[in-house]
Length: 218
Image 1 (cartoon, helix red, strand yellow):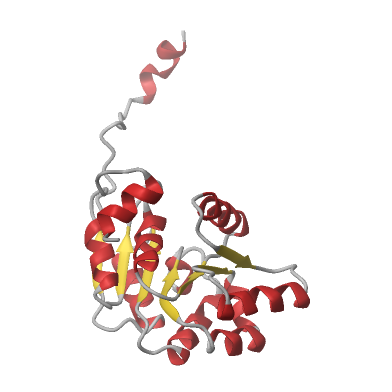
Image 2 (cartoon, helix red, strand yellow; image 1 turned 180 degrees about the horizontal axis):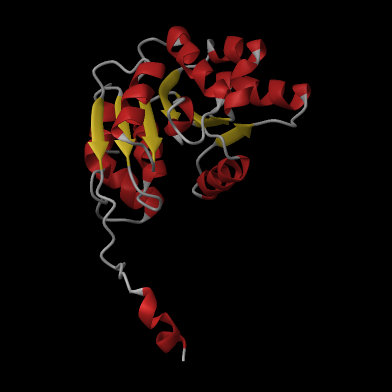
């Protein structure tokens, strides 16, 4: 199936949102990609759809366990095989899930960044047929960001394991300086950069003087 057919089958949409199509094509062309999109802008579809279009498994790095669980359940509801590995899981359970990613039909492996500190996880990933590395909340890799998380620096080790696999870095908040730092820390190569406008037509801002605030409360 092509991208439009996958979009219709799994998401029920006839058209992509702004920039989604361009980001997806960049990934399918094997390009490293950095996308800055507002919350609710459809970031997850930008890695889920191209990963479905390619053979192999997509590794998704996400710092939020609740979000990982939600996305895994959403994918399963669509009939897509997905698993998540995060802090607090037992070694035996992790071992079984990693085996399923190597030998089974799993299309998405969600990992918390802390899991990349495990040599077991990194070794098992080397046996996987990885088609895409997606980094959600990518600003967490930057020391210039407000939410820096040191384990994110381990992501570039995935690049050493699978040097030919494209990386898609996604964030809803990053200054120009942070975007440059993301590209550097993740070793993005000639990355295509997409920045979606954060303007919201349904929102307006009004500045009112203090002298009238009591009148407005009456």
